[in-house]
Image (cartoon, rainbow, N blue to C red; front, top):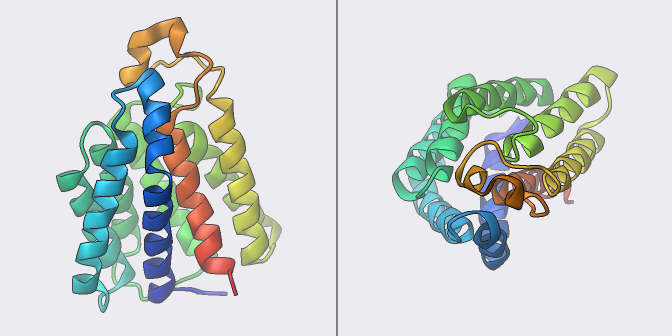
Length: 211
C-alpha cells in the first residue's frame, strides 16, 4: 500500500490532535525532569503547522515535511524545536519531489531524519531522550519491511517498539538535555520527548491503518 501525500497530511493532523489531547500530560512529565513546557511547546508548534498546511497541501511530500520542520524551528521553544525541526526537515530532503512513497521509502526517510536528529542533539540510545523511542521504532519498521509484512502490521510493530522504548526511559539516568542536570534524581521519570515521539508513531499507525 503506497503512502500518498494525503496520507502524510492526515498523519500530521492526527499527530497535532494527539499533542493537543496530551498537552497537560506531556507538561506534567516535563515538570518532573525539565522546564514544564514540553506539552505547551509541542502543541503550539503543531497548531502553527496546521495553520501552514493549507499553503503547501498541493505540493510534494518533501515540501510539506520541510515546511513542518521550518515551522517547528520557528515556533517551538527549548530543545524540542531544533530537534523535531531537524527530524522533519531531513525527512523532507529524503522525500523531495515525491507525491507517493512505498513503506521502504518512508523507512529510508525516517532513518535519515533520525541520524540527523541524533547528530544535532548528540544523543544516543540510553541517554533518556526521544532517541530511546525513535531508534527502536525505526528498527522495528526496518525489520518488518525486510520480513515482507504488510503496512498495517509493520506500523503496529513499530508502535509496540516505540512504546517499549518510551517506557524504558523511566529507570534511566539522563545524560542529555535539561534532565541531565538532575543526575540520579532523573531516574524514575518517563522522558517527555520520548513520549511525544511515541505519539508521533502512534499517530502514523492511526492515520494510515484506520479504515
